[in-house]
Length: 553
Image (cartoon, rainbow, N blue to C red; front, top):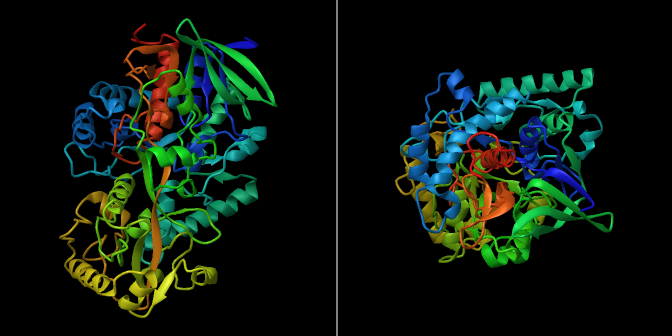
């Protein structure tokens, strides 16, 4: 070996620095290798939410939860299936035990976290579901505190200096006095930051900034532009990695093990075509390094792979000259619904974004549904955000010129502009409007669960989720099954150890994040169901490698 550390982490996304902190506290040397030029992974780009049942913040605030309640919920939503070996009962139970302890550990390391006051589980009506929610996020962070590391932290799509839960309310400023108050609060915070030389960041960037600050302080060594090309295996065990850096190869040894946290394959179109057909790299919000390198390396060394056809679907729209824009919260607002290319509505437009995209892909197998069309009226456009724009009918002219935003005086004319059957879209609209007037969606139950209502507009009556589409002119934009990352990969056990195809442990190798077959199987129980496990299994892997706690040999 050219050099040796106690532990090596491949990738600098969610969970990597958590593992590093555990090992540094145990007095072990840690090297994190990041193949891109920026630290933070897809977590830094995302909301940075962690789904942590029975966490310390819930207990402190008197919000009811327990291991038993969370178990009932995962049993209902995830369940036991032969084709989801990443989500065995043993792994689910280990997650529920270890995740709250992981949060306690981070708080003990000075990481400032908190609970979001209201963010319902995505299936809150199921046994054990939580309407207040089980989400944990980072406090706002002054990124200037990172010093020279500031420019090495991956940027995000959340430029507003506001906590994530406040930011999600800002778009309701046309209907909510609370939202208007938050706009004033945000403006004052931004002004104060300029006057005092601060630069506040939020969401996933705040989480990863705090983790990076703690890791650097703890002397975790972090190298960028250092992609791992190969695992080094001796006598059946992983003992190090081959790294490509500055045009040369280097062999780095790991005394205690290697943790793979290299993301999924969201930016690898060939792998998408094989495992998740009808999806595109252009529709993902995952970090650029998400190219499946370690998935392919794991296959080469005989590791078991599973759940490869799943992704953390996130409905997107594609405005001209911009990247994909998440449209979940907008589609769930009143005065809008979605149809396939025949003009028929086929799902609840609210609910889990992963389920939304699964249903769109399934529909496309029967009826052309990629893209589907978001149908809205003038009241929607005046009241709510659309893609990256604030409420108002004055949209970028290029949206119209390039055919992205369709506009027509009647529903029939809008259907023609979209290539949809006018009679069917007219009938669909009339049926939807009937449900909206009654405040109950008899076809797909949009608005029945707390999460649907949370996504909607709490000021709107009789339903926070439903409103008629009847005020012309009418508008439509295409919607595609985007994602924030893939959801399948290597199979690991309850200690985050990589398993071979025969079910045996591959010694010295651990994995977490979207490099793995998710512990949540083919579902997304609540906000942060990928970042929470990424941090938790990084924590578990580090404890096992350092022989901390009750761990197997």
